[in-house]
Amino acid sequence: MRHFLTLKDFSKDEILEMIELAIKIKKETKNRNFKPYLKDQTLAMIFEKSSTRTRVSFEVGIHQLGGKGLFLSSKDLQLGRGEPMKDSARVISRMVDKVMIRTYAQETLEEFAKYSKVPVINGLSDMFHPVQIMADYLTMIEYKKDKNPLVAYIGDGNNITHSWMMLVAKLGLNLNIATPKGYEPNEEVSAKADEFAKYSGAKISYFNHPIEAIKDADVVTTDTWISMGQEDEKEQKLKDFKGYMVDKKLFSLAKKDAIFLHCLPAYRGYEVSEEVFEEHQEEIFDEAENRLHVQKAIMVWLDKRSKNG
Image: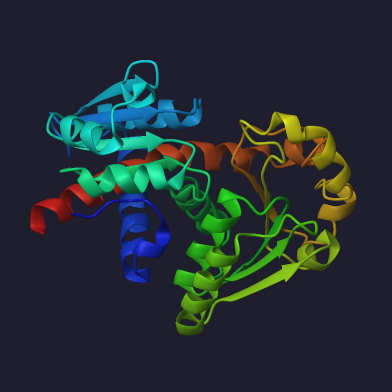
């Protein structure tokens, strides 16, 4: 049984297979050619953390593939009322064809997947957000035809950073990461990414100042500094991240034709300026749309693998 919990579980060829499938499905979607790849299948969508893009993209995606999405919030389930996660997994996976979970702890996903009879997809956890980074990569190759652009991530060492690290390490790309001291990526994730990079030829560089990381970048990306559930840290983070806002001056250090990506929601005046966001809104909202297409591809790919063993 293959699950989609983190990109570290996939080979380069498998990641590229999913991307190629996403390109194919996106073209079909744009032509209003909705092929029922997952006809009559049901996707359980479990949300411990709410989301605009994750819910819409998965619910629309399974519908366009010929199936049905079942939205389940924490209020709808016994997860928060004492039932063991493994029992919930055993029950739900007997009634649906796939499960998407958007949750707080990566351990929640892993335990559910361990006892599930069907593929489980990570819609976001505290450690990884792999569906988002697949959408980011699809957007990047649509805008940047060169095989190995330099990506600069400016901000907090969070689940988005970790997922970029896994993607880059697997595909052999180049990534600069700039975080304030104390906000670096998780050490275990960094060690694993460095291990993969030895084989793929990837280069991941770490900085504590954004100017060093963004210089000559082809792709600049960031994320909110204050994630859901971390609002009490806001004032401290605003002090610690001073100078990390991607504004016109900072962005000018990247290449002239650099693109800007943001997984959204974006908080103008914090991690990105209004000016930079609006100047690059086309690629940002292409990126948001690409969540739909890559997630459809991931579901179809997992379905084929589960049937073929």
